[in-house]
Structure formats: C-alpha cells, structure tokens
Amino acid sequence: MTRLPAMRPNESPAIQDYYPDDFARCYGCGRLNPQGLQLKTRWEGDETVARFTPRPQDMAVPGFVYGGLIASLIDCHAMGTASAAAERAAGRDIGVVPAPRFVTASLHVDYLKPTPHERELEIRGRIAHRSERKSVVSVTVSADGAITARGEVVAVPLPVTMARPESNAAPSPH
Amino acid sequence: MTRLPAMRPNESPAIQDYYPDDFARCYGCGRLNPQGLQLKTRWEGDETVARFTPRPQDMAVPGFVYGGLIASLIDCHAMGTASAAAERAAGRDIGVVPAPRFVTASLHVDYLKPTPHERELEIRGRIAHRSERKSVVSVTVSADGAITARGEVVAVPLPVTMARPESNAAPSPH
Image 1 (cartoon, one colour):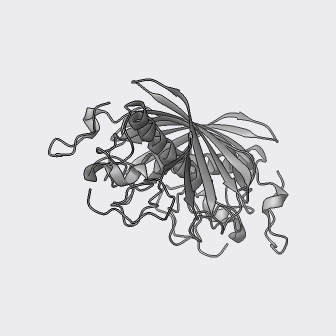
Image 2: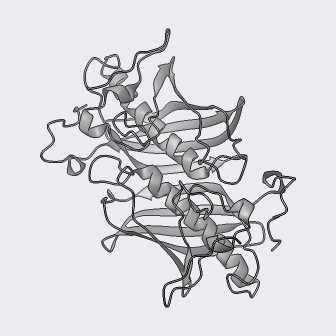
Image 3: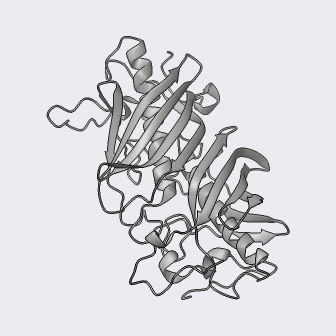
C-alpha cells in the first residue's frame, strides 16, 4: 500500500487502493500504472460505482467514445466489484486487509446507443451471482443520465499461475 | 486519404488505411489517432489478420496483458473484418473506394488463459454471418502460437446519427 489518495468527504474507500502493490499495475485500474486509467470502484449501498471522464483520444468517431474503452471500464469495474463483494462476504470493510484480486473469465457488452464523448461517465455494478469459484457482475455505463452500454462479466480469483514466484504479495485467500 | 504507409512486400492493404478521414480517429484503429493503437486488419485468404505488440503499460498484472486491451483489439479487428467483407461482397478490392465504417452492437470475449506480455499478438478474424444489416465476426487472439482469447462481435453499419453533419466524409453505402 504505497500511495493512498485523500478521499473526498462522504466518499467510501476505493477497492483498487487496497490491491497489493504487485497487483496494482493494471492499465485500467492500477493505482501504480501512471499511464493507465486508474479507475476507482466504491460501494454505494448495494451497488458499486465508478466515474470516469474519457480522454480526448478515447474516441470511436468524433463526438463518441471508443467501444474498447467502454469494455475496459466495464471489465475493471466488474473485477473491483467482485473484490469488494468478497470482502463484504467475509464481513470486512474495504481497506482492513489487502483486497483480493480477480481476473476476467468472460466479458459481454451490449452497446445500446452511442456514448457521447467529453463528459463524465458513471459505471455502476451489481453482483448477479457469487460463489467461491466465480462472481457474475452486471454493469451499466451511463452518460448524461442515460444508460448507453450494459455488461455482464464473469470474474474468477486470480490464479496462482499469474502471481510471480518472486512476488511477496500473493492474493488474499477468500 | 491522407497518410498511406508503404506496405511490406507480400502484405495486402489494411482496411483502416481506407476509412474516410473523419472515421479514422478511433483509439483502437484510427490511422489519424496518434496516441491510439493503430491496429491494421488485412486479408489472408478467407481470414483477416492483425498483429499487435502490447505496450509496456498494457498489463493486467506483471507478465500478462490487460483484458481491456484484448477486448479492444478484438473489437477493432472485428469492425475492420466487417468492412473488408462488405467490400469483398461488393466485388471490390480494399482501397478502390473509401471503406465502409462499422460500429459494435455487441462484444463477447472468453479469456481462455492468461495472455503473456512483451511479445507480438496475432489477431485473426472470420465472418460467421453476414447480411446488409449486420455482420457477426469470430476472432481469436494468439500469443506464441496458442490461442488465449476468443471473441464474437456483432458489427452494424455506422448509423447516420454518429456522422457529424459538417462531415463531408459520409460512410460509403453498402
């Protein structure tokens, strides 16, 4: 846990701020990836929420957001939601211990309408199913209050084959 | 058509080099997006192929490629494949006229195994179904000769609502 940004008032902690350092380098949500998107997933009641303003270059055609970015936001927010839900299932608040790291088994995105560019997007997640082996997370992406994309993502605990042997930051069991 | 890179010997033309300028700014495959990935989709027989070496920052955890990048490569390669197939169905070679631009209606990715980082990936596409209204494209991503992810993508012609009124580069009808 190296760099924990100050939270705004009334903001709950972001799960990505508690991934072990070696698992905090993801392009989409790693706090230690300076070129990345640094997505932050927080609880709001029984849903998780993240907010992200696409960069100028994140366009599909002028005026609309690139579908790959939307898939990326859905993917990382779903992994964060799975991790946050594992902590909640264990009876822990976010930040008490290092957060467990999940990876994506499958990702499905329906693009309902073009997503307008140059404004903040709201990404919301909800656990549709959860077991020790996998979590299914439903995600929406909204712009200007309208849902533009829906995702369903299957998350599984990070396999030991993806943890570097020299790492001293193994994923938390859960 | 502003900037057409010289092709290597025996390399067929890339469909993205023939998108109209205003539709050539996509983060994933726009030749006019200098910060983007600039993916290039070419025919190899009845399949399309693109090759891409992830950047150092495109990691999920150290040693493995970020799933959002893989989704992005599958997405853009599928749109390129749909465009190339529309040209072929019209009896035209790539580059004779501006290429039609497609957008993603839905994207599904199965991550079969972790994708190793720091090597060239091969992305292959094949048309599974094609009509005037939509194309379904099957895509694989391989590293070191092994398929690590499979995608199925539904592509539809770019709707007129995504073309800027001031644009003089409307998508080709097809």
